[in-house]
Length: 463
Figure 1 (spheres, one colour):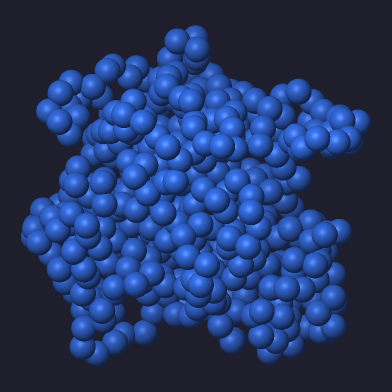
Figure 2 (cartoon, rainbow, N blue to C red; figure 1 turned 90 degrees about the horizontal axis):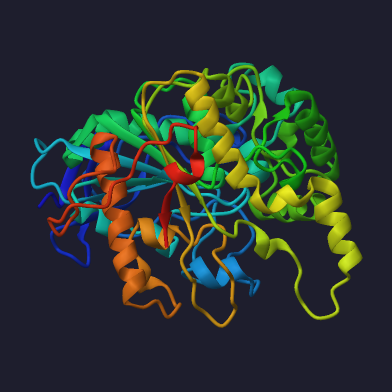
């Protein structure tokens, strides 16, 4: 087993995973800490180190709300450690590899977490890459800056660097992906066989990379990340204009009682974080915008127009996406629900991801794309006292085959489904086709590529 690797910045040492046939390297830096003068700048090169860097622990999570404080669905589902460190110094990645030699040239999955570009981290329990590594896939999860730290736009930043004026979180992802391309061979991976994948905002991030034409992306997996409805989600997923975000940025810097961005760099990160979460109570959040440099348009619309790269794609959604966002407690004002949801986005708010995926499939056919697109809908019964339905992101436990880490009382049929979904995904990562033989040596059920003529027939139903 490869327990150490020599990267461009120095030697790293990992640990055996629960399965000793897999080595996990946690907390490998891929860029300089984005602190001090590097705050609100494109990621800078990582410094070299002497000796062996022991990569045994996950790096700090990016600046955000303290995870797990609120007793909500997602905190219960995915949060791992109430004492996890939060820091601006967060640009680290993790590698799970089952390679025995640097000559193995295993296929590579690069994973981007979701969280509306405001929350999320690579140490979430469901993202453990060990099972995929057992299938012969190297898994890399990349951290990136969030919220105001990742997506502030301001006239001062344009003056400082008009080539990288904003979208720092997306640039972090790009830097991590480029690091993987340059270094993954040292972990036994094939830099020419990279699948870029993410869920929700992570899935949207994959489309941004595709729109930017990053050449190392050979295949894409987008889970619940194709969202077209412009009314719902308050613009979290869809890119805003540079003008909109710069105006918001000027107001935020003023709310810090600073005259310039450079002056705001002297404030500590917690002060900025806390001010931001007060600011967004009556201002838009900072999310990706069309900066005219890295982001030149809405990647979903570019997909519909047929201008994204023609590469194999695997995409889908859960049956009850976002219905957990509707208040259901006794005494809830039904009129308020109607005003917030139905009058803003219509009944299609509840199947917005489904409709967006099917629109994308139809566009794929109309644009005469040659690479296949595979689609799925995830719809098993999800157990638990909270009766959550098949909620946004619950399919991740299954694709990563990490059900045993979840508190829910999943049964044998759930575990069998997870094995099948992981098998399909690993086959796609390896070849661009989810069909073939599973880990147990048995033939998997056929998964036809979607042709857009009858999406209900083409979709793989996981239930």
